[in-house]
Length: 256
Image (tube, rainbow, N blue to C red; front, top):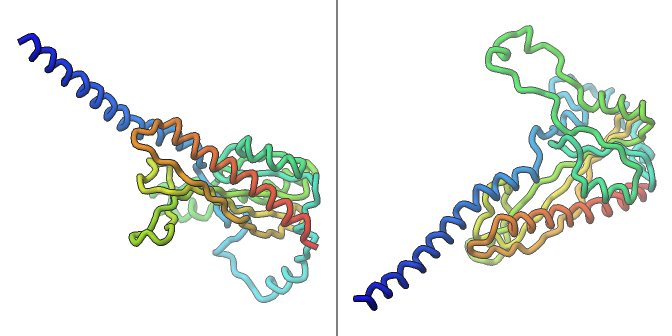
């Protein structure tokens, strides 16, 4: 009987360990989601807010021709060490890693990238007078602040994570948005796509630029800790900043 009891204990102990591992693996998912949520911004700026586009304003042919006359390449040139205002959409201040990379090429100041436009409540939407209240003009306020600080350009950037999965035939990679949830088990690659909007403080002229994407292999191991996954996601983002800042500086220094 003693040998049977020992055998039962020997079987029971591994079961406890397996159960603990399964629980640990399951509990890491919420932890990863909550920590990964800090890697992407909230209250994202819209292109309309940054580029001063009002879809309700009537545009005439004269407006278009006048803009063509005023637009010139000098509005978009950003020589090395130029003073710029750097803004990350959805963040109170740009990520420290991006600031560090952009400081290699420019003298930067930072500004909030949180959208000032608040959604109206259903009651407010029904109220015609409230609906006609002017909304904050984000970019004009920022242009004024930049002019007072003698900054020449405003550089706003948006960043978004994507996860690459093989298609059903396993012949190519399909990219899907990643929104702070748990990374899909089939994920083979991660990338952080960045796009820039540059606004000339003096004229308000703007240009959009998207540097090439950099992809990184994602190592997905069973029962991988949330910290290991978070480290991979962070490395992808920081690597993207290095390449994006370099490509941006080369693009706008040679616009002659």
